[in-house]
Length: 330
Image (cartoon, rainbow, N blue to C red; front, side, top):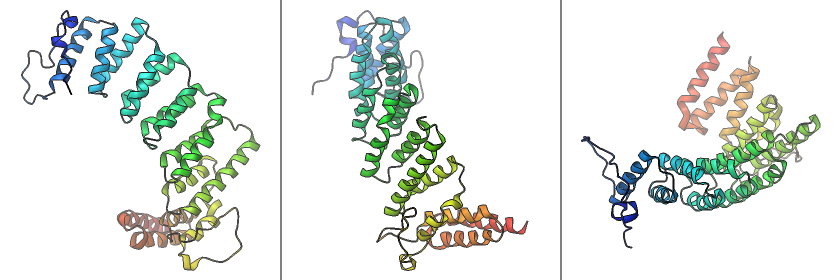
């Protein structure tokens, strides 16, 4: 592959005075950039000093961004140039489609996209675009953050309407996708759609059923247990409300009872790896909250975690035991 012509060798850039990064200095440990990048940044500093805003500046900043997508000064100067010369923001967004897929984990790509969307104000196509990026990486923080910003900033019922189905598809594909669980909580409780008391009760019941069924299928899934905790806390419901559901998950498969199936409290699926450390921790938290003699029950559960089911956090469980016994004595 032939090397691109340096700006220093282009006649159309001969009017720009390039500025070296280490102008008039001799650093102890200079960074040795490739010639192409060094040349582009030298000319970028040159046009930034004069304040030029032009089509060729857009070409230079695109080149520089492709070399270093985290160059936030180049991104900012590019945006200012787009504004100054009256560029078509939708054309810029199409370019960002390519760069976002290539550089999903680069914050500056998504920040620039936000600035463009504030000007274009057509958020619906963004949800489709983000869905495509999830096929590349369904857990990228920047992508999820951008999607939630789109939904919250424009806050249109049509945007929210398909969001629950969308996140359910992602969880069906990967039930351990913590980002998708977080987004489900965001969608259910921050969309502003469910305002009436009746709606809140219905939504709470639906979410309890959903998360319990998810746990029954994959008991050792921290994301689902955290969702259950968040669900109860958000609705000011004590953890003890779900003790009947939790207890079977703290037992081995041999200890499971053969009672009739309780649709409100689905049992662990066959072949589940039990006891579940997450359920034991949850049950201990319930006993701790109840206090009194129940604190002894909590310390016994913490001992089982430290000695057998969650040995990696043994020191933590020993700390919890000490604090629990201290609470009993006072």
